[in-house]
Image: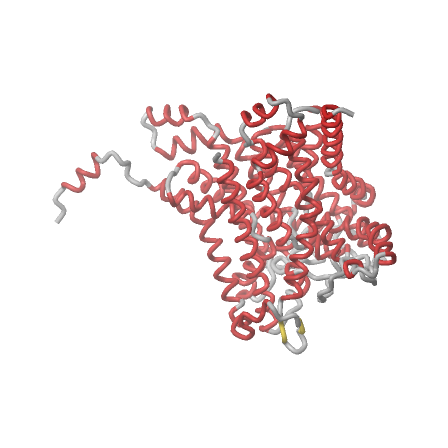
Length: 312
Length: 284
């Protein structure tokens, strides 16, 4: 049957034949996307019961009642987004300052310690932050911020009493600390990617360091910093343990940041092992599915943004 | 005040402000370190912490040996799977061009940011739900999935730093591709590859959320991967929320041990290899 010609063509082909080694590499490479697809597929399968029962109304329903089996995720979505946004707003000025400081010339002797310090900050496990926040930070915040604020400014809904140790504010603050390193690291990289000529042209016009940084460098790095912000936001949304330990885990939607709240990741962490009814389990998995979809979308958007900036 | 003076003062104020804010970033690190050492060191220096298992409240001499063994075993099993596959995946990314490689890279970058609790849910749905029992092995699977993209991307980064001429010289000698890649290029990039694996292991050791409903925790010592198993992180989480000082002290000691593990991993790799560590820090 075989004529020999294809074999000859193969032997003399410029393209090397795909040997076993190449196939093994490809296989190993494909494990990553395959596992991502498997994760999404199993989470969709696991939440099928919940999706079928509650439909799209799941994300706008506020009730979370394991006894009567009415489940809605709005309270947790609210808690996740509000705590992440507050955490991000607090982390932003500090993160940009670290990035500007590390990327710009001068004060070399301080760069080492601050650079290492911020990297170490990223390395500490979430549960250690949670432990520290539970015993040290949250009581301090209650005593010096939440409690006085709700006493004096309680008429504003944001500080409405009763202030408690475990609160939205405590959760947001621990998120601030945890997203700071990635915010700073990515911002530093995009600030460094701003062409040197732009800085030099600006200095040549007689501007000061601050004028160059504020009016030339930061605007040029704007898109990349925006990417860093989205990346950090995604990280805050997915953060579980530290937040669970200090946010109070009370399913209610209130404007007051000194009161307890509940996040999507926290409700999974707290209730999943105790859930026995299939609909309850399925609803928790659907929250997990929403969580991973949100973070993947945020991260994908941020990556594409940062990539486009770095290519400049 | 002239305009020039005003501008100079604004510049000085801005510099001071940037410096102050940047320095403020390190304050939480120092505070966490101070408290973890102060609260955890006395218990950690007590040898019982390493040799005895957790004892009920009121009975002295307890430790967390079951959690130390558990962390070693769970993370060890995860590493056994994730390191070889991750390194090979990294070689694939470094050596191939084209759409497939691009998509694998994107998938890895995206997966680095996947919430670890969702990966834990996956391991639950994939393994625990069908075996009907919490197992250390399912925890290892979750951790392995979290380690995989980190190892692959750092391996790729280190391989790309190896000069192209090394690869070309191997090919010119007529060596088969696997020998060029595994015996020539990989050894040259080994410090970076080890750095990546080290950081991924440290990160896995610090994970709590994916173990909550996989390894689950266990106050008794077990080395059976098909049983529920404890970990240092689970001890911190569980004991911190109890009202008993004895258990809380053990939580602090476990936290200190975890901090020592991750800081040693990070600092050693940093000083060994500044460049790859920076890439690693960005990914981890």
